[in-house]
Amino acid sequence: MNNFRYWMPTEIVFGAGVLDTLGERLKPYGRNPLIVTGKHSARASGALDRVLAQCPGAAVFEGIGENPAASQCDDGGASCRANDCDCVIAIGGGSAMDAAKAIAGLARNPGTCADYLVAGVFKRPPLPLIAIPTTAGTGSEVTPYAVIVDDAAQYKRTIRNPFPAVALLDPTLTNAMPRHVTVATGLDALCQAMEGIISKRATPLSDELALATCRNVREWLPRAADEPDNAEARARMLYAAMLSGCVIAQTGTTLVHAMGYYYTLRFGVAHGLASALLLLPLFEYNAAIDPAKVAAIADALGFPANATHLAARHAVTQSLRDLFRRLRLSNAARDAGVEESALRGFAEDIFPYRARFKNQPGEPTLEEVYHFFYKSFTGF
Image (cartoon, rainbow, N blue to C red):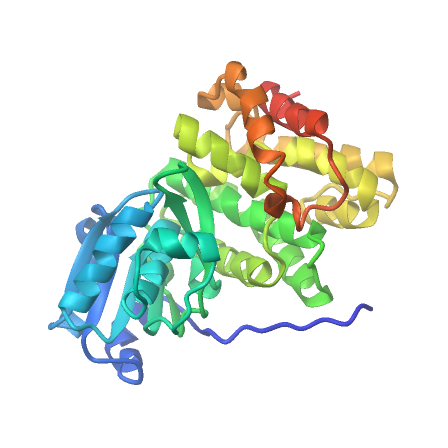
């Protein structure tokens, strides 16, 4: 076994009803929080009212979109300072949690969010953060990353923060997710697990968590999609999402996520689906580099294979096709609204940005990157 280090300082509290323990759990971190949330789901579901009942003096910064922009985080940081907040509570999906991380940092650091997208890190420690997910996908509640859209470049960039202090995982908060959000966020958890296994920074421990994520997604995502009141399915998918966050907190993501950003920002494809549409071509490629790991993924997804290149490639592509079929979803990006005319430009844009390749095994050429996009477009 290789030597490795694994650091996960977030306190994870999981269970139906744990949201109602927020007031007590907040006390060690502050008494005047800024609540950061999305446009409407937390308020409409009553979750925001439950938080405010426990934090009656809190300020609220709401309206975070699916892809939070640096300029919006600047506004949140200003609100945090104006209200003299001493901690931050994030309630929502990955976007709300990522924006909250940036806001917590901007509350204690000079300048704008764009300044830190370049540096990738805040100089001064951010305010303490309690993260409360209402979707089951990103695992942002247990990662040190804030993924924010650079307004000028119109590309997603990452700021590395300290981990959230506490993650409150209440499966009942995910009950209100519509089917398409359930599917897209669940696929994001799968992507993070698969990418974590193949990443150059993978560890034996992160591999175990990633394979557990794959097994949970295989069994429970179709159920959560088709049986929205299935409490076990909702709980299992929230658990899987958290596991996938624990994975990428250590391993980072690979080209799958980096390429998927183009589908999201150019064509509005939901983040989790955008990444999932790249899985087949990238893991066909990965099978030639590390067939044993790809075979292990296929096995966790229900398609056992020998650890040879051809067997692993066949098994992983079949397992992914089967999952898309069970979700009643096309694996061709053209069916999600992606246009073929954009693909060459996407490849040429990402190829010189070598930071996006740092965790990706192999040395894919520009032409190979283009063909990843093209195969994703057609569904091959």
